[in-house]
Image 1 (cartoon, rainbow, N blue to C red):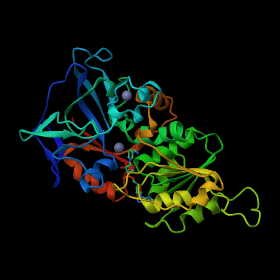
Image 2 (cartoon, rainbow, N blue to C red):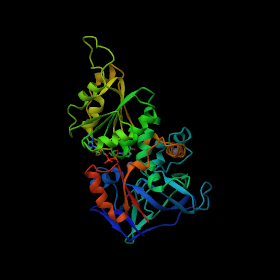
Image 3 (spheres, rainbow, N blue to C red):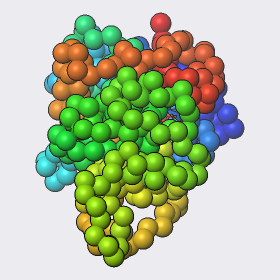
Image 4 (tube, protein in one colour):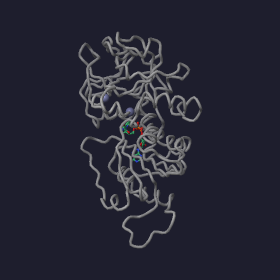
Length: 371
Ligand SMILES: NC(=O)c1ccc[n+]([C@@H]2O[C@H](COP(=O)([O-])OP(=O)(O)OC[C@H]3O[C@@H](n4cnc5c(N)ncnc54)[C@H](O)[C@@H]3O)[C@@H](O)[C@H]2O)c1
Ligand SMILES: [Zn+2]
Ligand SMILES: [Zn+2]
């Protein structure tokens, strides 16, 4: 079957891939559409180190083709969005609605595929850049058949990561102010999550000027064009969102700026700009994934004296079986933009061309199709 494999040298579109049969608690899914998230590119670039060969892709949707003997929640023919969380469902984290904290949900790399006859790894417990995949029952979240799978696939990472970071992790309240650094597939969904949460100011920040109309379409009220090193961005955000009254003299930390700042890039200069753009009481949320070992320096007084903070956020701190149906409902009501995220949808063989367009800043999301 067809798929995209990273060999350690390069990403190859291949015909020479096989997947094993599903085990008793697993399902076989025929993929229909898959979005390209930056994390796939980070495997190719080495930012996310991974054993090879590995079948890429972790943002996908498809149709259940077969189910294992113990599977009770799914039948063949159902349309599903693939969750990357192969969480156990029974530990304390799972029982309290925090599957992203479940120990089984991270690092569970296995080799369900063969590539040129040799074992090949799965990525993010998913590997949706393959015609057929085997995942745990808990990872296949059913959705109504009238939702186009070319749009629904984006829920599996970019939408869930972005919207749920706002709703689950930050819990933004109506009237709060926010800045979003990096308005790609994830950042645009943070922007629309903020719109859904009724944030009063949503400042989008990107190094690519062409992202401004997209960001505004998803709900941004303002746009700041940034340099790679982020110089001047925090000051620009403070100008846009000034303090509501004059600062008393002698105060340690500048006031003004936003209540929430989301790093959707994964670069130390960006997280630092995010922290520097916070108002008193504000919190930065780290979503972007830099190379391992990356550190950021923080003026501790800027945190401790005025209640500022920083949070990490994996996969929108999502509860897939709650959040994915909710996002589908929001899409069907017209409140959540999904079709608008799909800038290009092309067959697997066009993988490189889509990546080129991503690097040029021309796409919100590029989608691969299997038909
Ligand atoms: N925490 C998680 O669970 C999670 C989930 C998905 C993706 N990610 C990570 O989130 C990040 C974004 O992923 P994506 O798919 O949205 O990427 P993307 O390539 O679609 O978008 C990145 C955006 O950031 C912009 N950008 C690049 N450098 C910038 C800078 N210095 N300042 C401002 N903007 C800049 C780009 O122009 C682009 O618009 C990646 O690091 C990815 O690995 C994390
Ligand atoms: Zn992703
Ligand atoms: Zn668990």
